[in-house]
Image 1 (tube, helix red, strand yellow):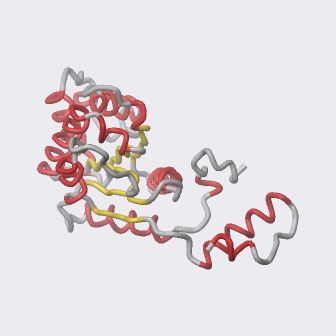
Image 2 (cartoon, helix red, strand yellow):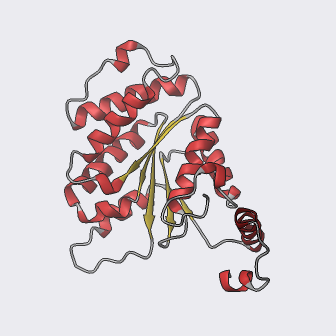
Length: 234
């Protein structure tokens, strides 16, 4: 069901917010046409506003356009090895990138941080030749704000990817209503990532989107909804 609140919406149930997907389309075109130096997009929103659903919709959109995209749940992070495992997972998932990447690059073994960077840059350069991009989304990224070593590794890898200007893009999504309760909250590292990213804040649903959502709900339960329900959702 598209109304299981505890889970992100599957792309087939994604309602509204098409303009966010259009922003991603525009951003990808800028990367391919060398019109931006950014190599990251950032979805920001309060808790429960659908960041993960937007990420999943973006994955589907990118794959539909024959790009490569994967989402990693950052709640799985426990050490500085997180980003290395994420990169390794992404590369194994895509294999030969639909025959775009030669065995020479695919056979490289990731042996550490520098190895992960080198492999990503080589593959990004090959994708650039074919006007393709690879997105690695790190969803629920706020969980890394409390794992300083892991967070720093992600920031460092991101900077190296951005400096190289290949067609590898990191995606981030995190809560904006998460505040640091201690002086150790990593504002600087968080801001390093945010300030270098294409920031896409998610706002509340518009009237048109709310109506579309209520229409979908009415179809789901096969019943007419109360007329004042829209008021309570606005």
